[in-house]
Image (tube, rainbow, N blue to C red; front, top):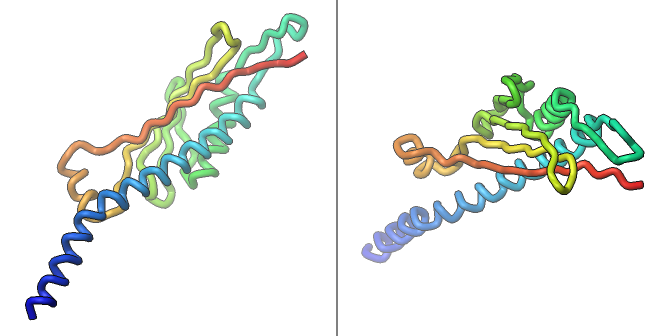
Length: 157
């Protein structure tokens, strides 16, 4: 009878100890999904929203409104999100399937030594998948996933 009790105790302790490792792996999976969606959406949006001012001197400008619209369409389709709401230079997304929290995407465009760029920053509150950590995240401070990418516009002669 002691062996059964020790076996049950071992299973319970292992499940409690292994749960944070499983959640860590799930966080990496969600980060990869968000990175992939951001990268593909941003590349499409940046290439479609470039306005050439002076082709001879290789000057380009990013049309931020067009970029935000195209990025929003593509990003919402990639992660199964509702259509975005625009607030200034930010887009807010809600999840259709409750897999992710609310996304906030910030856009910054400018010019530096490397050329015209657009910086995109995404942040969302992570929804824990395992029961214990989901309960603790409600009581403690929630975990926020933040991803940043910077895209440059280069025209080759």
